[in-house]
Image (cartoon, rainbow, N blue to C red; front, side, top):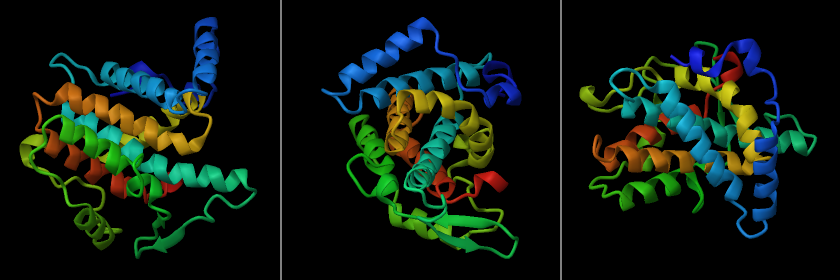
Length: 242
């Protein structure tokens, strides 16, 4: 689905080349960041949102449930990646911030500080929920119930599968979107947000764009649920061995 737009796996590993336009943009971000610390995340969110719109578009347009699932998966994993990057920057093993849980099928899951996922005003939960409410959401997902379900189905076929009505199911699983998109987008994310703390914020702001753009096609409360049903399990996965 994304190969034509994002390029080959060999290309994905390369750092993006800075053309004059990009370099000028990044210089502007650096200057404006003194007034608005989140300017990089805001502009990066618009870039990611547009890239996914272009990459997921077919003759019928963009399947909004799939877009929300992909962005939710990326936002969730960004919470884990943020903690890994911070640990490495401190000279610690990147898995140091986590409680690692193994399952009978040999997989590992990482449980860490939920601050970026649901513990602050800039968390995925808060930023996405705020957009859903602003867009007119009527029902909201139960955060604790999703967390408990995620733990209950670790290592099973139900893990990471959004529990949504059949007519609102995404075209693929959160994990498959994550595996396809995370390594492709990461160099761009690092350009806009050198500080990994801002990575989950960038993806959450991109989700806000998706909720506002798709509110005529999908009820914002359901959009919020799709995002969190994708984000919470993907914040736990072992992407290196997925």
